[in-house]
Amino acid sequence: MSRKRWILAGVVIVVLAVIVGGYFGLRGQVAYAQIATGYAAKQTCSCLHVSGRSMESCIADFPEDARDSITVTQEGDVVRASVLFGAISAEAVVDGEYGCRVAG
Image 1: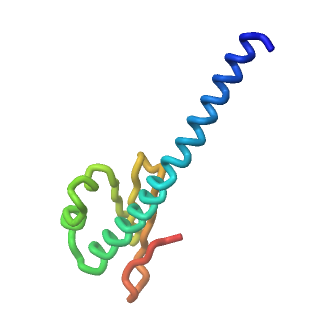
Image 2: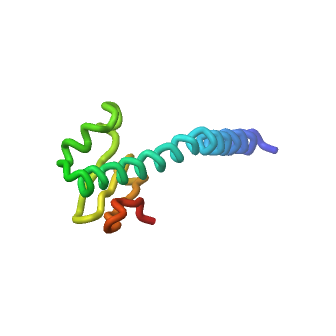
C-alpha cells in the first residue's frame, strides 16, 4: 500500500472515532435537553393557563442559568419550549379541565 493510502486510511479512522465518540458523549445531553424542554413547556403552560400568570412571571420560576438557554413561546393554547435554536423542542397544550399536557 502506498504512503498516501495509509494516511487516508488513518484520517478516515480518526474521523470515524471522533463521530462515534461524539455520539456517545452527547446522547446524555440530548436526552436531558428533551426532558428539560418538555418540563419547561408543561410548567409554563400550567403557569399561564391554570394559574393565570404572565409569561415574564412564569419564566422567572426557571433556574437562572436556564432562562438564557430555553426559548419559550405561546400561541393561543399551545406553549412551545426549545433549545439550540429550535433543534430540540417540546409543546404543551391546554387540555380542558385537566390543565395542561405535553403534546405528542
